[in-house]
Image (tube, rainbow, N blue to C red; front, side, top):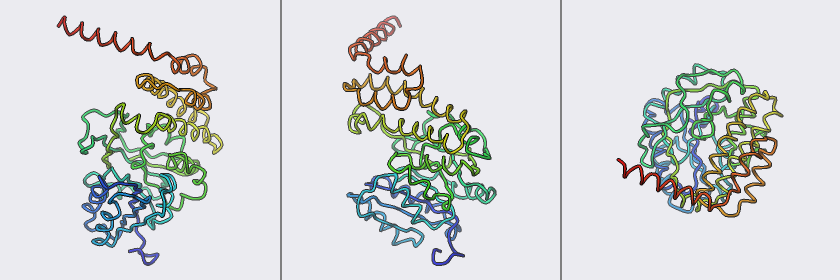
Length: 336
């Protein structure tokens, strides 16, 4: 399948992984189960960021059974962004579907997607809808993010970024033409969102297509105070700031001012919710966080009037508000 130009696959399923022993076999099996007569069109490429768990053994066992699985192990952990970049260097398909090692393809996803892919040959970026699931891949009855109700052809990036409802942030939702992932993308390595930077670069000139049908099971991360503390509060804040940096940079690429403002305004609204969480979690030293937010949102009066004062509201105030809330709920419960 990969030994000659005429036999190159149409689609590479690229799985970046690091210590993915818990779910990676499930991700691989979700692809294998759908191949049937598609083996000549599909390959699975796995880029392992020097895992220290049993990920290598699990993947090698799968690769020994199927010659369309290609496994690469990095000598050291290169970080998420560079590992995704390496997937595009190692893949041979015309398009690369990036699949997180803890997500999976839904039943029938491959054939459904290939139908769109073959119909829209001029498209460089596809975004596929996904189901939000718990740790066991059971779909939640209510969706957190806005849904997409119909397929949409987007002539350019301005159209795409207005209509994709931020679903492009999930790496497993993206299928990208491999030859369009080039040196322009390198500048976004280290942001944690190389895939977002990549589609911003590509769609400055190319077309995109949004698939409304849910083709991916997205295993949503666990929430809670312990998870936040384990990750480090700055690690939770930084991703949003990196996205804003990319959205600001899009002006240089020729995107309309309206598009950039729409994306940044959406992040500004999310930032207020983030500050609320930081207060609830009783984060004490917020100076570094404040500096990062000022760099991103300092030009917005709303940030100075609402966000920054809210960020430095004394923790004691929120403790008091929580007590009042508990007392109110207890009082209402007593009345009932």
